[in-house]
Figure 1 (cartoon, rainbow, N blue to C red):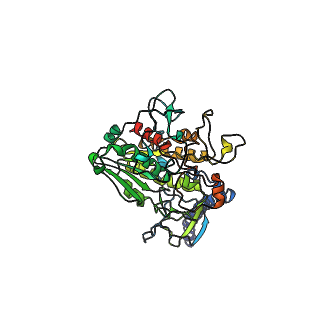
Figure 2: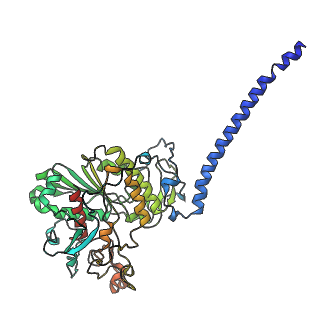
Figure 3: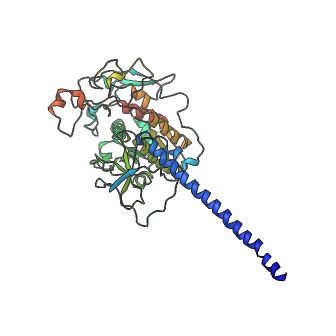
Length: 451
């Protein structure tokens, strides 16, 4: 009897151990199944939609933290190649912006400066003469390169129900005294930078101004104001193999979506920053090469998806580094329109912006196919989370009307033109950049108003 009772006392212990084991197994398996399901959701979503249509990374992929390699990543340059390419995995870096309260996009007070019309004004405009600007680019000097009409120089932007502040070089220099103004982005932002130099250089004695040679970072210095106006070539904002300011035309565009230090280390000490990024994302898929990828395996993603990752990384920098928007002012310039199809503004029209001599006047809702609405919505969503830390220069709609403002064939071309091109000017017309004096001067007037 005693032996029987002794054996009986072990069953509750055995049963308890067995129960704990079963419970642990169930919980572990459920957790494992959930992880598999999350991975399956990302993979299946990737299979069910084309890469080009992947437009909402912030909503579709959760933040992830990856173990970084002990080796520092090799910097990207024009010689960087992908050893192999796979589809985008859904990976993205942890975003400080994701958890921020949306403060809305900062706009000018009093009226909507970005809605209005163009008014012909050959009394007040242009604000400078092309031939009097020593920093003019041959890519933008349309009159120098043979454009016969000059009316593109005489248009003034007139907002609805208010006036744009009249340009004043002395007042602008006083705003810049002791400061660094830096434009960061692609060739369109470089055009705005050149416009700013042309608007301001005449107020600085020749022996008090200087400029560095053309490089990734180009600096104009005005000694009498202890101020600089700079341009940093960073077309994709994050590190890429296109960061050479001169030799950047790559068949395969590779970027590090988690690395911005190469550029931010140069722009972080500027007092006023003007960023742009758009057209470089409109040329098909891009390749992602993460910093901890040691075998050079790239992931392919749509241009829009790549831009979203880059914008998110940039926004993280703004959120963490701009503690006082009154001390460090950050602006983002919205997409600059193109005018590549005449049929968009003229029924049954053929060609593009070549030989256009007037703005679009009778259609205030005009919106060309070159300005991508999903991209604009994505940018607006990210910028809105930064609140007052960034101000938006919404130049898209007002520039949409200016089909007449592009260089077309009246610029320097660095590649030889074929006889077929020469016979049909529309085939090689530049309908992306802007003549100077011209539209970018108005962008800078808007910047002047915000400052």
